[in-house]
Image (cartoon, rainbow, N blue to C red; front, side, top):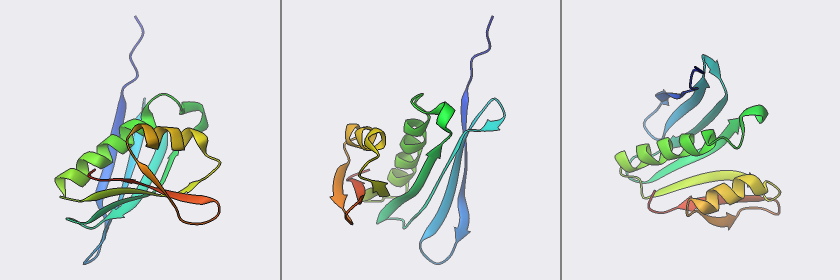
Length: 122
């Protein structure tokens, strides 16, 4: 019988806490090995921002990025945030853009090659 791989999400919501905003780090782990990392900041009652999400190339398209984002959206709802913002997405990153749009995010162009994606409410 094969052992099922179970993704675990380890988060540090108080990674760096100043008056506001609060920074966080969340990491997906699989079989005792980190397979990605996401980080950003949130301001309770206002915004929840995902600055960067990375999933190891060999682990992509398995739902791990979606699991991380869903955990972050849940945290945003718990903190009463009005918007969940995914920053600095390259216009050429079609895979990520498709995922964010499937989650209901709306694109906002921030430069010639970068977008932010906004989900409101989270």
